[in-house]
Length: 338
Image 1 (tube, rainbow, N blue to C red):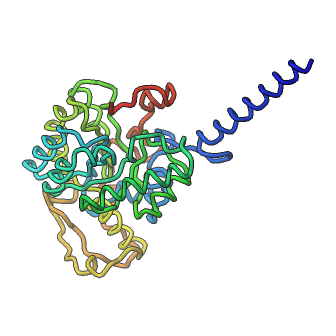
Image 2 (tube, rainbow, N blue to C red; image 1 turned 180 degrees about the vertical axis):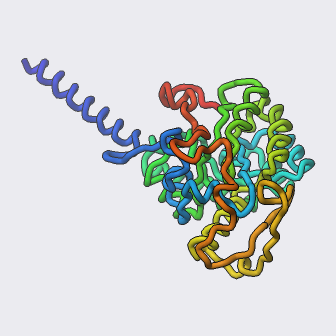
Image 3 (cartoon, rainbow, N blue to C red; image 1 turned 135 degrees about the vertical axis):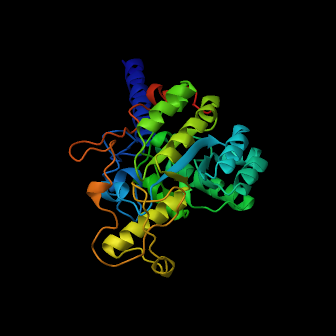
């Protein structure tokens, strides 16, 4: 009986440890873990920029001062980032690259070369872990290591994107405490699944919409192969592909006009430039509006309705409906960037 009691006691201890570990691994007890998905579209401010100052409503994404989309690449730095950065420069396109901290330490020259091409660098965690699974101490250490690496390389600390789109309030808070704004995406062609360039470009192009944040992964060769068609189609449809900072400034400009918020003096000095382009702007133009405190919108919504976004009903531009294999099958699975 004593032996049985000891066994039961041992089992209870093991189960207790297991439960405690599980509670920690899912982001602490009672902590909701969220992930990028279709159901939480960009009509919700908490989806696209959780913890951000600006309410990114559907109206403000589809009614911008300028017809832009933010171009972003995850999971570098890798050698292919140099090819991507060079191609984008030749085509007068700017992008934001979300780099992994450990990789930045190992490949600092790639980081500096991408920055030299006038692109932005964002933070994508130190080791590409599912941050909602690690302890608060490890989470702080992740951001500490990443920020230290970026500071040493002269990278402005501005943007953060959580691996796999997984986040919770503690992650958002940690990013903010380190001077980073969390950003997700609105278009994911799922290039990380190993599909070919034709499929990548077709999925991306069919999901274009004003104010989009496009997600790609530079560690997959098909992504680079798909870029020429994606850039060509964007320009043909009157879009400019820009960094997240320029994308954010455009959103701020809309807020300034419609809500009298985020109105720095630099914006109030801009001169109106009304274009004769059928979509409201000239190809390659940067700013098409003067700043006003009136409540009247810059562009008539009825004239700026994209065929991708219906006037009524649910969003048609897709969010990521699937998560990478490591998220589906547990933390032991091979991560996409490996």
